[in-house]
Image (cartoon, rainbow, N blue to C red; front, side, top):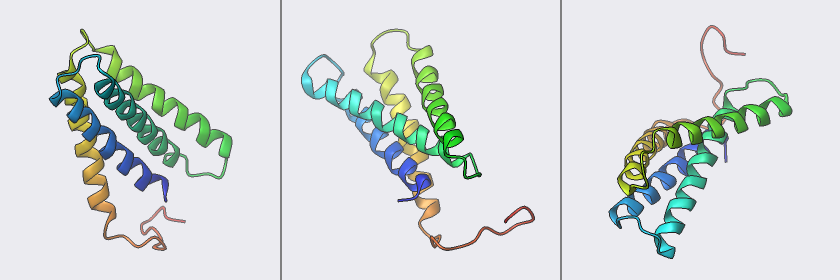
Length: 123
């Protein structure tokens, strides 16, 4: 699976899990905790997969560094503004992730995998 489709699918899944977590009201029961942490893992995977697509060269080391930095950036942005342990905060970010992932999946649906990019800077 291409990294862009992996990122979109992981963002959609993570967002839906966070929305379910918010609808259940959060809490510390095992189901809520699992939804929250699996959703977080999916969103981090999505941001890392998207970050790896930003590097257009064949340098694997650079792809790994940018992927890790993208994941940590998303984690820091989500956690920086958390006021308390409120499930609706995660639900908001879940809706954002699900919306972005869903749009990305819909946009990539009509593209063929072997299609070469067009434009002035395409190689």
